[in-house]
Structure formats: C-alpha cells, structure tokens
Length: 312
Image 1 (tube, rainbow, N blue to C red):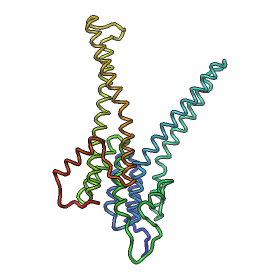
Image 2: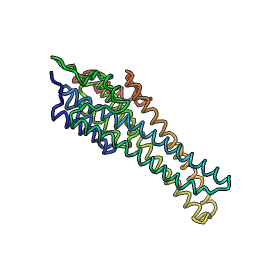
Image 3: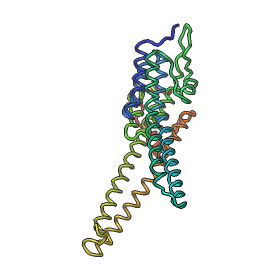
Image 4: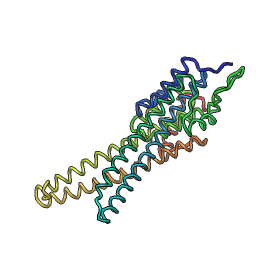
C-alpha cells in the first residue's frame, strides 16, 4: 500500500499547521481536520493532532519560557544597572543596550513561535512528514504512527490515545485565554456521542475553563472598581471628598475590594497549574476529575444518559 500523502491529506495538514498563526482562534481547525481525516489518512490525522498539540501544549511551554526569559533579562539588567550606579558609573549606559538586547530576544522568541508552523506547513505542502522538535517523535510513538508504513491493511492510529491526546490538549489550552475553550467545545460537538470519556473530559474542561475565565474578568473588574473608589475617596489631591467619615468608609470599602481582587489574581495561576496537571494525568491514562467540577459533571451525565454513546 502506498502511503504517499494525497492532495487532500496535504491540504488538511497545511491548514492545521497554519491555524497556529491565528494565535488561539484557530485551535479548532486541527480537531476538525483530525475528525475529517481519521480512518482516511494517518498522515493527515497525525499532522492535525500534532498541530493541535503545538497550539495547546506547545503554547503553554512557549508562554512559560517567554515569561521566564523576560524575568531573567530584566533581573540581570537591574543588577547590572545597580552595580554600575554603586561603582560611580552611569546605569543608563547599561540600560540602553540592555533594553535593545531584551527587545531583540523578546521579538525573536515571539517570531520563532510563528516560524515553526510556517515551516511545518511548507514541509507538508511538499508531502513530507514534518515533526515538531521534542514533541513530534514522542507523539508519533504515543499514537502508533509510522510514516513509512506499507502493508496490505493499514493500521490506524491508536484510538484511545487519539481521544486522550485531544482531551489533554483541551486541558492544556487553559492558558489560551477565551479561545482555548474552542478545543474542548469542538471535541464535544464532533465526538461527544462516540466517546463517553471524551464527552466527560470536554464538558468538565469547558466548565472549568469558563469558571476560570469568569473569575479572571471578575478580578479585573473588582480591581478597577476598587482603584476608582480609592481615588474618588481620597481625591486627586489626597484629601477626602465629602468629609472624613465618607472618605474613611470609601477607603475601607475600596481597600477590601482591592484585597479581594488581589486574592483572585493570585488564585488564577493556581487554577492554570491545575489545568496543566489535569492534561498530564489524562495523557498518563487517568480519567481525571477536577475537584467539585468533575463530580458535578459526572452526576449531570449520569442523569442524562445517551444510548448512542460508546465509552472509549
């Protein structure tokens, strides 16, 4: 059997990889490509799932590395500037070149994220079996994909691992603000009736991500309200408007609101970490349940069974 990619295979592979350029909004396209091509083409299915991983797991690793790089760069620049000032030199001499170097590194690292999908799309357009660094070969082994396989009967990708990969990428996509919810939503719409496992994981991921997003916006609104209330109470000149009693009450209320907003802001990263942990657990073979959310979703599904569902 000749496994050379057809034109349709290449088109889906190219679309899946280029969807990364939409910076989150295109995360549903690899799932659609995988849905359309699974049991038709291992090549297109693998490339679509690989592109999905790049937009979720890859984005997670990229954004964390990006933040770490910025923190290290700013810390080094600050230390050098302080030492220059203590030595009698001018910190500005180091600050200017330092800012230029950081700008180049930040922009270059940002461009690298978009460069890889473009290279992948070009390679797939030429019919080549592209693999992302680090992730590609591991995913191929996980799915049982062999690009040079030639046999009388084609062995499809491991279905259980396909579903687990899609479910896990839904968890990892929590760092893709708002658009990350498209991953579990698309998986639920396309495969909710075929896999009870994928249906459960997709629903609980949607609920969890929606709750985390709402909490994030609530914290932002509370912070803005608290800051506005504090300024209104103190006045632009530092004097309370409306007399001391009203000023003190306003300061207390705004202070409480700002503390609450700070607690929410500190909670969000912990919720993101839990989402990453959920994705890891799913890839390792667990039917992970979020605290509270998982149990509620499980009860909901048990009260609304569907005879069309087949557990994966």
